[in-house]
Image (cartoon, rainbow, N blue to C red; front, side, top):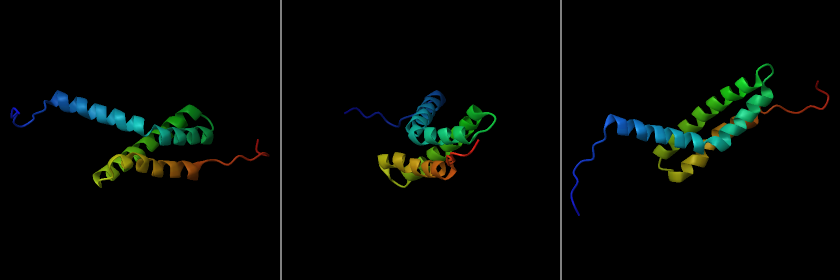
Length: 103
């Protein structure tokens, strides 16, 4: 085996790695964040798509932060579904109820 020495990354390499990790974490959070975006769309009155986008961004931040914290604790790949839990709980708590007599 050939000794390679210390691995050095250029600033471009670091930026690419961070972009890949960020994109991957957003994609892995989609099951929970799309649920929260749907709740935001249903709760909106004037600008429903903008409301859904705001809920999606907030849910994405919550899910990514929770996933990162679970990964730091050594949860491995179980950190991904653990990151969905707070976002899905927020979606359940904010889900508007359907009332048949509402207009």
